[in-house]
Structures are given as structure tokens and as C-alpha cells.
Image 1: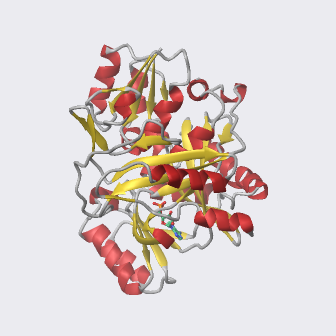
Image 2: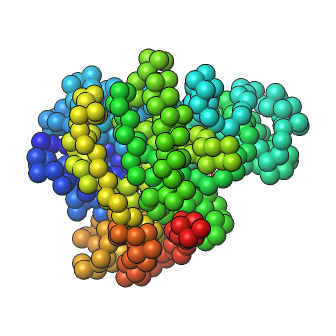
Length: 422
Ligand code: AMP
Ligand code: GLY
């Protein structure tokens, strides 16, 4: 069985490691992969947005199954294109990936089907948006409609910031066509929870919950990043909250997509906020989260490929999806300066006897040496019986991995551990 995984970050590394546990899989290609993934898969220099290149490679190499991990190719229709030439895939078609690709779509979907989310208004011209801002409650949240590398959300704490945000998105087009429309929504408060969920449109199986740490610096300070670390499970996601989410959010979303003729098959990511009025959807993603995947998949005890194949064949209800009762912590080691300007090209040294899993996000191989090549470089992951042990173990491993110019947060898991004590 020959597999192809589209993407080249830490998330894809974690997916590939897990897939490798299945003995039926003889070969895994990563398109494009990265210098660290090269230890676990054959990396092919085809970009994740190059749909024609992906399809051509799959056909030329008799690929049996494809996993499309990042948002861009999903929204661009990579799954549709691969299925058209007869290659089964894990991932939603473009008609369903729109749940992440357009915030206007997802907000309208939630309103139509009564799924709890922040109150909002949609604007397709700056003038009307600016007029609305004058009387909007502050803080207010302004979101570009389309994909914006995770940066399309601005939380404005003053009216001036809100005006600036509207102008930069709609007039200066800082996110390009993604800012042709915007959503302005109510500012919600409460702990955030990420829930990745397998679904084939008939069955919905949430994975173990997790908590991302989006800001660059300790204490949730600094700029927003792609994610500086994660822990699983998330202590705010209690059994009661989980039951409420299933009833009011997860199943209604699956049914809503079916009713719209946009059946979602793949991993549906629910970004939730546990407000005083109950859980509400902050965002949907049409894919595995990064770096949530790096803590969720190491806790999966079932075979990932079996589950992915069942999703693709719409028989998820027939397979077992079991998670360990333990915990995991992922500490991201990034290049100094990330998410702004940073230097790359520093050698990464990972001791062979390290007591943790290291997923590589941004590195390239140069004459057998692994060199930093991105903002987020490594995700160092420790699983253990308890969250305290996982956090402790992850940091002990971090201290053994080295590259010049590295930085990481020192408080990944601190909030989760504090919540467990209360
Ligand atoms: P998103 O890209 O939609 O996940 O938004 C990025 C981050 O902005 C989220 O993880 C939240 O921390 C924050 N955020 C988004 N929407 C809201 C909201 N309505 N109220 C408060 N915070 C929000
Ligand atoms: N960690 C957030 C995301 O994957 O979008």
C-alpha cells in the first residue's frame, strides 16, 4: 500500500509517524515534506498548492491513498481532483472545505441551523462596516472572510483599532481577496478548547480534546502565532461540556453540512470557547490542527490508517477509535523573532536517546545536516500518565535539543495544570 501525505509541517510529521504504525503501508511520500520528515517518508518537491502536480505525481506513482492535511489544497479542491482520477482520499472536498475557507459561509451556516456562536454582521463594503463600527460594542472582533494564514482575526479593544482593522482588510487588502468580505462579531470570553473530530457525514467521533497556546510569549503575551504549544486533554472540556457540544454543536454541524449538500468527510476541527452561556463555536477548520495534532495523535491507540480509510469509505461507524487515558504536551521550539522576522540555517541537534517524540516543522537537509528553515522549527512531544508528567518530560527533552537562535515558551500547560488543581 503506497500513501501520499500532502503538506510539510509538524502536523504532517505527526500524521506520517502514526500512519507508519500500520504494517500494510509499504511506502509513504510527503509532498513536499521537510528535512525532518525525510527520516520517516520520501519527500517529493511538489508544493501543497500545486494541485496539478499532486495529481500527476499520484498517477505516475500508483498511489493507493492520499491524505490532504493543509487548508489551502483542501479549499482549492485537491480531494476533488484526486478522486476524479480514482484516488481515494482522507479530507473534505472543496464544497465542504468552505466551512474553513469562508467565515461568512460558516457564520451563516451556524445562524441557519441554530449552532451556538458569537453574534455577528457581514459586510462587503468598507463604508457600511465603518458606519457599523461607530455603534458596535467594544471590544469587537473583525475577521477577514477567506484564508489568511491564521492572521485574519483582529480583536479591536478601541474604536480606533476597529476602524484601522476594517481599513487594512477591506481597503488596503492586507489579506488580498480574502478581505473582500468581513465578519464583525461579538467578543466572547472564556477558556478555549480545540476538538478535532473524525466524521464521514454519518458518524462523528471527537478525538481527545486539546488546548493551543497561540501567543508568542509566556503568560499569553506577544503576537499571535500559528501555535507555540499544546496539551491534551483540555481540563476545561469536562464530560458535561463534551455532551453539550455533541448535542448542540458537533452533530448539528454534520447534519447542517449534509442538508446543504456539502457532506464533510475528514477531520473537522471545532475551535470552541466555553462561555458562561455554554460552549460556542469560535471557528471551524476543515483539517487537523497544528500543533493540536502533535498531542492528539500520539494518544490515539487505534490504527490511524484504518480510521482514515473508514472515513473515506463512509463506514466510520464500523471502526473503533480509542484514545489512551494519559496526557500529552507539545512544546514548539521556534526561531528567535518568530512570528515576525527571524534568521534560519542553524544546525539542529537531536540526541538519539531523547525521551520524547520530536516532530519537525521547519527544517531542511543540507549534506546530511538538519538546518532550521522556518519560524516554527520543532514540536517536542511527551506523553505520560498525567499532564504534570507530560509537561515536565517535554521540557526536559526541550533542554536536550539544541539549535542556535531557538526560543520556546516556558509555560505550555501551566494554565491547564492550574485548572486541574481547582
Ligand atoms: P480564529 O483564527 O478564528 O481561530 O481566531 C483566532 C483567535 O482569536 C481565537 O483563537 C480566539 O482566541 C480569538 N477570537 C476569535 N473570535 C473571537 C471572539 N468572537 N471573541 C473572542 N475572541 C475571539
Ligand atoms: N492551532 C490552530 C490551527 O491549526 O488552526
